[in-house]
Image 1 (cartoon, helix red, strand yellow):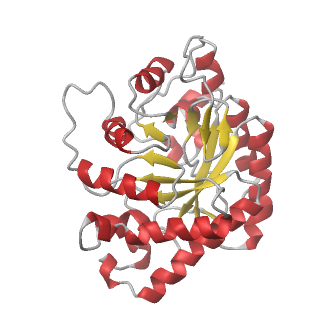
Image 2 (cartoon, rainbow, N blue to C red):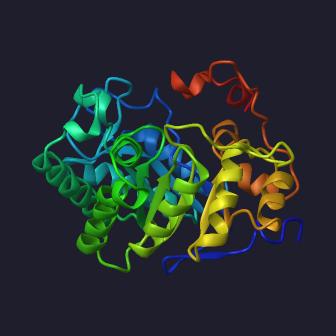
Length: 325
């Protein structure tokens, strides 16, 4: 076998994935239309990743609350009207042989026009906790095998940890309460992943342990708001992979790593080194939906051109790597 670990199955929260390749929640910002619902291009987009051989496809972040995001137009999951379209997406992913998750997002303080997390009232926090739980239940009704909470990249659940006061354990309590509520509503056997980041390695590890204790089934490590990472110059991979490698020894649930993973050699090397259990391949799949099948078959996928400003932030049809297909 060319990549023995990358191609091997893995069980996440009772769900068996056919391989260790994950399509993380990456958006084509040209897909979403004014009604913020799934359209046929979404179905083809995500179905293509599954047919291309990935083990897990995580659908782009969907809003759990009716709060306009000033930075992007996101698909909604705060209303039952979203269920039929998302069911079409989960059906397409399953038809391609992959497992299907969807990421749940609250945009955060910028959308709320607030300067600090501590300015929020308990009534707001309670309502948004229930919004996450209700959105997760809709995702389950739409046929998704699991959900992922977005607690990275400066969004609300990340802000709740990094911008509130107290010890790491105290600052984690809101995110943990959201996780526990989702598990309560959807059932303890329903897989829940958490994409999370933190400003330093110590906070990251503490949060990872707390997330596992609160029921997280997959820890999808990325970046947060702060940047005090202290990555050793000798580390051979991206700083996000280094952060996953910090988490991995402290937990027993699967850990996913992300960051400039463009080749099978890089992916297998990360897994062989014990830095993670799965790899998130984002831009590689945007440039070539068949990335997984090609890499596992020894074929070179379409390479990312590393454009200075990624055209997927406008419309994926403009991507020069995809244009050659």
